[in-house]
Length: 312
Image 1 (tube, rainbow, N blue to C red):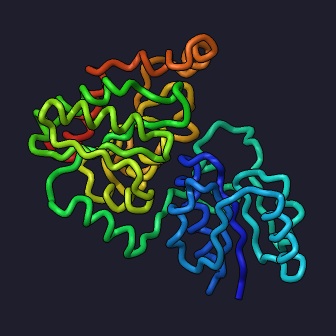
Image 2 (image 1 turned 120 degrees about the horizontal axis):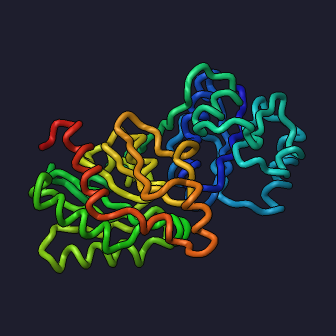
């Protein structure tokens, strides 16, 4: 039975995008036994992968030594390393594909397609288990429209203001998303204070807002299947929403959407200033690139996405 070692990128958003590369590699081998190495925060993204033999959510010398000893006795048939991990070269594999710095500016789904010999961009592909779907159904059992707000991000430079997200949500649930439930979610524990702040502010104004920080990312993906709209920063949740086909508006500042925009049929990005200006400003003010985004501009872009889907 063929074996695959897949090493996911440490960035959560990229870990979502990388599920497409994993799925492509898996479909090329029958009855595959897959070992996945990822960050602890990404563990739930991969837990329902077909043919999963081992899911390792750590990065330690002991772990890499253990993998190397295992592969010495029984080499992996394929090793795909999208983290460019130095330790991977000590692990025996018959065929190896390792991410390197690209010389061409392109989206990661295209970069990884070339790496693996695919003739199309490798859009993300998430697999579900019953646990994820049951959790999503238990949290929001009714069929009300869902406005998902994802205000988190790895650092302050990638985060729009909590007040801005709350203001846009208030406007949208007044019209055109009257009666919608606002679901405020974070991608990792670091986002807890932000989601609580946005949800509490909305609830104080009588908006039906739910702080769902803390649910696992696969359950969050099951919720995204039902989302009428998702608005958020460049983080794992907007990547998940786009992958699930939800209309997704992602706000960008210092990072480059040409390389890492959420990938999906109804995904759109918005930035307040050019990337070069944002990068230069980031050295002086970490949030300058995001603060150029106005509430009116974000609301208008969100409405355009809704109208494109037939909601007016």
